[in-house]
Structures are given as structure tokens and as C-alpha cells.
Image 1 (cartoon, helix red, strand yellow):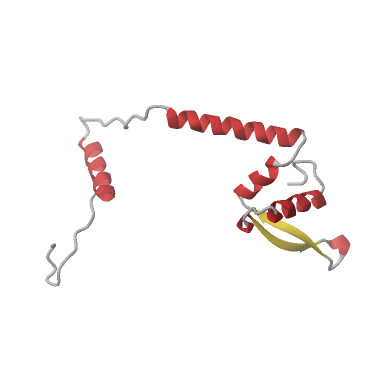
Image 2 (image 1 turned 90 degrees about the vertical axis):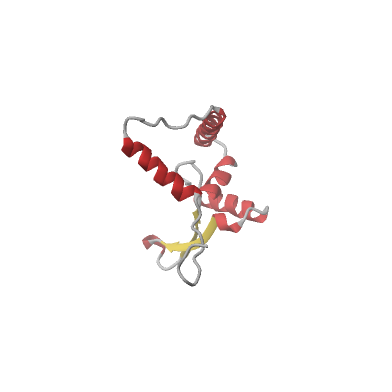
Amino acid sequence: MSEYFWKSHRDVLRAIDGLLASGVPPRNFTQGYYTRPDTGSQQHRQYEIDRDGFTLLAMGFTGAEALKFKLAYIAEFNRMEEALKAPQQAPAIDLDNPHSLHHRQILHTRHHVQPRDRGADGEAS
């Protein structure tokens, strides 16, 4: 992340610490440690970041790469919003193909029909 956004590792850690201090749920950031051969056994902080944490963090960055990310994010949001506003059409059913109808009936049954309880004698009630 620091390389992509041209930020130092320290600045990325500081930004994450700031987000956590401001009330961002810690579930978005899991702190861990790593070692590097050039520093021996010294441990360095790192975070595993989920998608929401990445977005929150990136939205706070400045610079050319951060601007590209923000513009792409906004464009995708707008595209999804338009797709949701568009009238939804049911998929066409080939009435000449009995397998198509049978498959749709099975899917409908699986999603909309609840199994009935069976009594002690095994009969449906």
C-alpha cells in the first residue's frame, strides 16, 4: 500500500492509527509484526487490511495515485447506481424447450416452497 500510494511505511501506519483512534472499527485492520533480514530479530508493525479498511485509508490519502483511486471508486459507484436504477427484465424462457421450463420450476420450488413438517407417522401435516 505504501508503494502504490507513494507513502512511507511510517505514514501508512500513522494514518491507520489515526483511523482507529477516530473510531473506525478495528475489524478492518489486524495488527501484526514482521522481521527483515537487514534488521535481525527486530519486529516491525504491519496491518492486514480488509477491503473496507483499504478504502477508508485510501480515501484519506492525497497525491496522484490516491486521486486515481478516488475517481475510479466514484465512477464504479455511479455505474452500479445506474445499473440498479435500470428496469430489470426477467430472463427469457424458451417455451419450445421443456428442459428450460422444468429447470425454472425446480429453481422456483427450491427458493419459494418450504418443506412441510412430518408427524411421528412420517406423514406430512
